[in-house]
Image 1 (tube, helix red, strand yellow):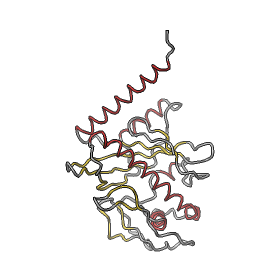
Image 2 (tube, helix red, strand yellow; image 1 turned 60 degrees about the horizontal axis):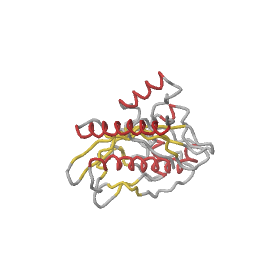
Image 3 (cartoon, helix red, strand yellow; image 1 turned 180 degrees about the vertical axis):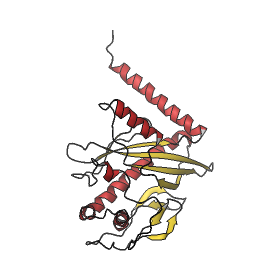
Image 4 (cartoon, rainbow, N blue to C red; image 1 turned 30 degrees about the vertical axis):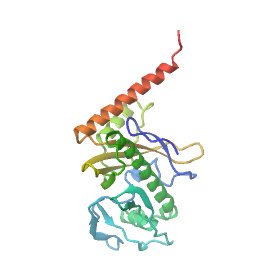
Length: 259
């Protein structure tokens, strides 16, 4: 696994060791959003989702474990528990492959190819969110020494570019040889709760695809940072950026020949 970045430009984060990522990252229309639905579902006939029940903690409908009408192969219905605390006694659970496929069906993307790779897609989805949580923990350690933080709620915002993502896209347009020109394929907003102080801090996460490893393993980049909602978050962002600059200067100084 590679490294993630939460302070400056998103860096490469190696994905799962598969021969090829099942998500077509070369086609923006196919990766413009996370396949798990985040918005209020439309009223679709024969859709296996309970449209009347929307979870206020993640703005998602309750996805059914029943097979989709067009489904030809049974999918696992077991869910994986994440490492992300939801409250003092429970952790968030990831959707099962069946729920994931039902989300694709809701978006009209339930193709035989998607069915074949859905379990790999779930693994990638879970891996990226685990990496995102580790980056959140790094940020939180800067301002909150306790280790009891929780993910209170989250919201997917696919198709909504964050201000920072817009800046990086502009940089890519001006200097395509140096910066990535592809937009993030997904965005999440996570609200972290600090139980000791009662504070809630919003984090913005941009998910990028990157060129694969030589062996074909997919590579992703995460840009995780606290939103500029408070003086404390602004202070941490400035401090982290300053540290990056000084680290770069020190590294450059080590490479200079001595007189």
